[in-house]
View 1 (cartoon, rainbow, N blue to C red):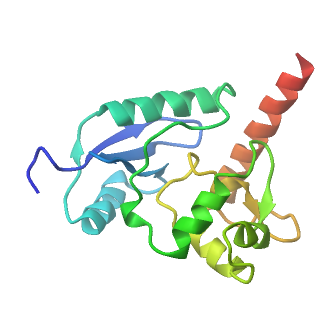
View 2 (cartoon, rainbow, N blue to C red):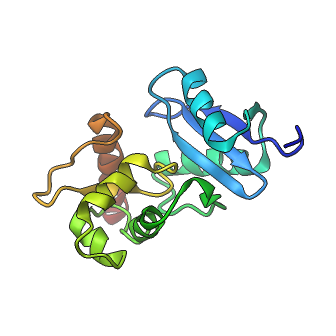
Length: 178
């Protein structure tokens, strides 16, 4: 891989902490809040991609950052971003694509997502897909909850999941009140 082909990364501030946005020529290969040292996250991505991302803004990262800002301001309900799915394998891809169909401000259980993904008995696999997704927020895994309606984890940060769900509910309530 030449330096021109190397993935690029941007750290973008948000209400849930810095968000790591890594892009390739195919689009966003990962986007998620960073809770530990960014250098550790970048090292993991380097191993997965077999190339060290270069700290440099790309049009895809700038567009993602702008859409995230709109989302956090309550002005965006869906994301229109090219995603590079190379780090997603097998059923995880089906599950994450099904998650994209959960409407803004609503939640669905792991079992419901499994049914939507075509594997009704794969609720645990949906949980694994959500836990290992390279795309947080833009693929709204925060909208997937336990069968009893409780939130469950979110990469070890359930407070972030609660924040995102509350953000969406507040934006919906504000729109309804206008």
